[in-house]
Image 1 (tube, helix red, strand yellow):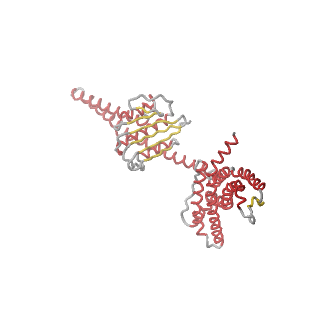
Image 2 (cartoon, rainbow, N blue to C red; image 1 turned 45 degrees about the vertical axis):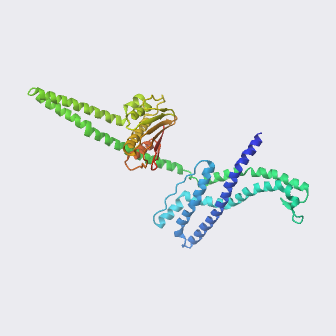
Image 3 (spheres, rainbow, N blue to C red; image 1 turned 135 degrees about the vertical axis):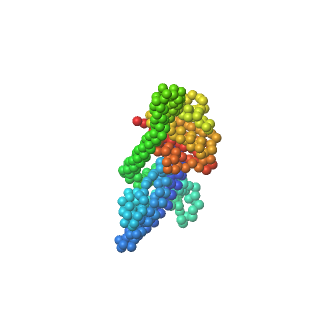
Length: 426
């Protein structure tokens, strides 16, 4: 039973594997021409004539290598990404970049391997299934062939029924070989990934560069936040508290000469102190909203939705709730993650209110214990774009500072969808 299922599974995969290897044969032919061209460039470079053409010749190979990366990535179910160093500057610099870039060397290695094996494997991939069909059909047509040119079956002429039956029996081992074609196709894709994928250490280097960039962005955002807080305190609460001190000082001087004026100044000082306290609360709320610490992210988002000028539909961990409903209880995430998610939703609602012309918003909060996903969707006019120091850029910086990511989709005519994913692991 298991054998039958195995045969059916391989037979089902066979057409796709044959097609994959057949296209690999075409890329093998293209690789053969590319290798020949590179050898000609190398030969003329020994004479000094072809040296200026080396960067362009290597760059012309990249579309073929990228095509194979896409094919192999689809076959393996995971994209194969590679970064080329930009070939710019004068000839000396471009030559240095071409020879030092490991991606170029790996492209040429793949070209040589594909030129030697691609067409051969493609011929076997096509020939084996056809041979199976031919061997199985020989008993049906061998008598129709003229006697002076008998059917050839793997080196012997079929001139009798026993030989025809033997030819049909040969179809069984040939079919067993043909059923290995999906394995060969998978192996060719793995080889392409090994040769065309990132060089050892490249992923780590890219990751270090990403973390360096996000750390710098986080430091810049932190500095900008501190400057904003200082400005808010200086221009708002600090100025009002200074006014309170002056008003109380004047009231003290007028207390005996003009009690009514002194009382009025005290009342003004009280109003000013209340305004200063309100502004201090706003500053504290902009740093870390108290509702987050007291009631959690879902309740904080519900409070935002209730204050939004645009009707907001909420979805917490799949169930959909209204702004007035009680959010379901969920485990708390790290404070930095909850704060980032809260400010992302705040900024998204503000952007939608100012620019989108939307009539409806939907905020979805989900994810598992390792990752928090926040999606904000509006039915506005679309066309949202990130600009330097804009709200969307700030949302991206918040996400990347926590090693998360943001995806923006806003075609003309809408809808605008902002999705932010934040890791929650320690």
